[in-house]
Amino acid sequence: MIDPQYLRENPDVIRHSQAARGDRVELVDEALAADSVRRAAISAFEQVRGEQNAFSKRVARAQTDERKQLVAGAQELSARVKSAQAAATAAEQEFARIAAQIANVVIDGVPAGGEENFATLRTVGEIPEFDFDPRDQLELGEMLGAIDMVRGAKVSGSRFYFLRGIGARLEIALMNMALDKALAAGFIPLITPTLVKPEIMQGTGFLGEHNDEVYHLPADDLYLTGTSEVALAGYHADEILDLTDGPNRYAGWSTCYRREAGSAGKDTRGILRVHQFNKLEMFVYALPEQAEDEHLRLLAWQEEMMQALGLSYRVIDVAAGDLGSSAARKYDIEAWIPSQGTYRELTSTSNCTTFQARRLQTRYRTESGKTTPVATLNGTLATTRWLVAILETHQRADGSVVVPERLRPYLGGLEIIKPVAQK
Image 1 (cartoon, rainbow, N blue to C red):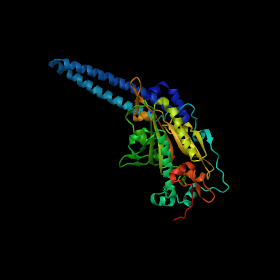
Image 2 (cartoon, rainbow, N blue to C red):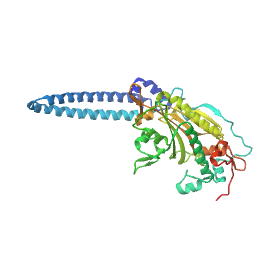
Image 3 (cartoon, rainbow, N blue to C red):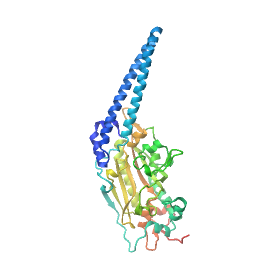
Image 4 (cartoon, one colour):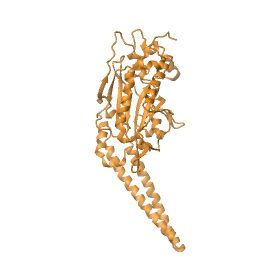
């Protein structure tokens, strides 16, 4: 949520951010008006409550006969206080409703525009070339006995799957490789809940325009998370953190669930865009002034994973209109997918500044003793989708796949994955 003081002092900055995102600029003026009403209502409430307190002291000092005469005045003041409090509460709620629609303020330098307006920061690795027609991930997965979409659909419906045999081993190996990297960087591993309360889902910004992609269990009023970022953001809700020794870094391992409402095309084939997958998510609580440097560290760790897996990729600075409401900046890493002849997103990292923490009341104490929101950041270090790029990039003409050297220790030294007889 936007800081009300920042809103009052920097309305033009927020207007510019809204315009860059393609969101309603008018919301800023609506929020300013609602903030003015809110502050006036709070002031009126505090004034009448002060009168009530002073009158109560007068009543307490009065003699018995006089006290009886003052009762009517006390009752009138009580009714005014109740009315003023109700007005202040209503004004607070109206301001919160409007302010909640304003997305996080984008960081200077983020490209304006929509999905296609990203800026390419760098391209790394040579695009793989083949002297044969490369197979796609599903054909390879079926040849290797690694992916079973048919039985996944039979059991659960479209866009569900089984990873079997080497497919299951590959995912576990990948996740363990990522976990070792996270541990080396000082992350604390967590296996997180995948069901969370509405206030946690709302606090992280996942119940906005993409609400239709979230699974909800009405009987329990709980939400299935599409990333462990949600649970990790809620981990320290309503707490004051001590960040004097540096950021708090967590690596959350979880199963993730997404409806993927409305998506279509090549993404629906295989395991590139599915309803359920596993992921190791980095999540950081940092001082606001440390957030941009920490964001670059998350990106660097992700790139090290891409390079260790022998993948060709590009890093893009995502355009403002393609950011989620909580992100002030997001970098995507897109790997080359041979069967599609293009780069596709494998991972991303977002700097959410103080936006999520303000909603979730996660704070730190400044030198003056005041508490103020921390910054939160997130980034994926491994996920099921990565198998797509690994299989396609390292395939051979006979359908076998070369295991990236850095991944081999996690597969008992296996160097080549060979096709198997189908069952």
